[in-house]
Image 1: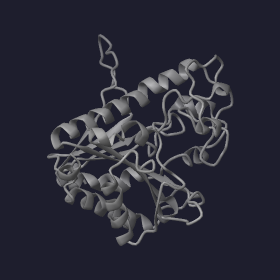
Image 2 (image 1 turned 60 degrees about the vertical axis):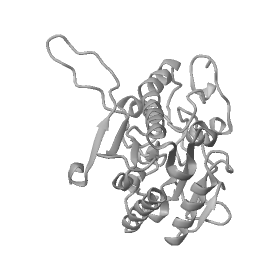
Image 3 (image 1 turned 120 degrees about the vertical axis):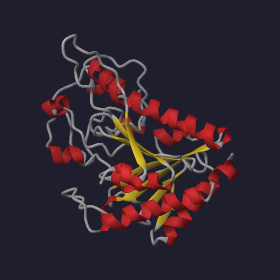
Image 4 (image 1 turned 30 degrees about the vertical axis):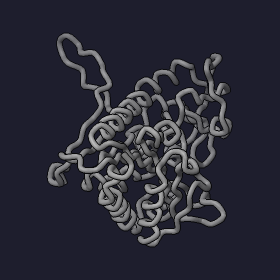
Length: 304
């Protein structure tokens, strides 16, 4: 189906590039896809930084593990699950490049010094880096080492400049434009979690607002109430309170609200094969209903 049939439009980033004199070179593949309604009617942005499924050849050439193991780092199909939000007046931004190559939900300075041939200046050590899950991940989602050799710092810088920076430039632009148009912006940062990482109460969905710091409580409360009404077990901030995106963009005092959502991957796909299951259709429909509820609440009136 053509997205224009739904009244939607798609846009891709222009990441630059030079043209040969005799024959133009094709533009580089975009690090993201942006789906927007023809008319924005809600102050909502749904972003999916970990659902990219493109594995660049320079990664595959030096990977010591297979593609399926690399794919276990993905938030599989989360971009598709939330694409319906555009039909309710929201912008939907999705990464196209795999998280195993560069992690868009990390500070670009979160680099593991042990991964590189040279000394890493301005490295930002964190528990995520120590776990091998920095801006350039060292291990896959199932804990397998990714690389057969150390990387050069130039390789990391190139990935961040080509993929991380354009994605966040677009996200910042969307936030600024949305706040200008509606008086506030509500960013929903969309993720999935493995079924064995849900904490002691085994929720289906975890909402992360950094313990109330990144998002107005009415947004979190509405999202939780809607999801519970749809039949999901919902927790807040445990075991996931929000990452780089919610920390960087969530500024309620400046009328920008960021809420992370983590969906149990076992609800909609086979976690071994990463194939969609029969539950996929239900989860996708329910996330569209969540977007509809947030849009209908006219959040810009109460949060501006």
